[in-house]
Image 1 (tube, helix red, strand yellow):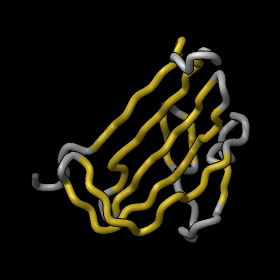
Image 2: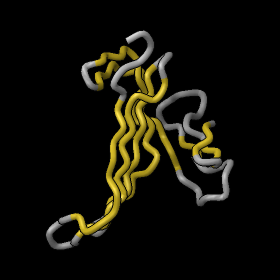
Image 3: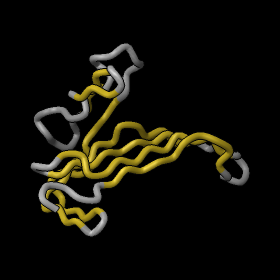
Length: 114
């Protein structure tokens, strides 16, 4: 569990296994949000930093012709969150051009004694 702006979220569920689905918002008043593991114990590299074991959590994935809602977090063993990507945009259904919304990404740049 993690507190973000005084709201509790369930970021990871145990046991960590493919096919596990949980409600990230089970401990707060927001609508249900199904989360699941996409990748388990895979090697990954972010900003030139290599990690031997990471897991990927998909927190939101709803894509239509007029909108895209997608959120993903990647965690490294013994380190924590190393990458986060969030996309919540509205699009023109004919051209696919983004009309509004937000899109951002956080990535690790260093950790520990670096």
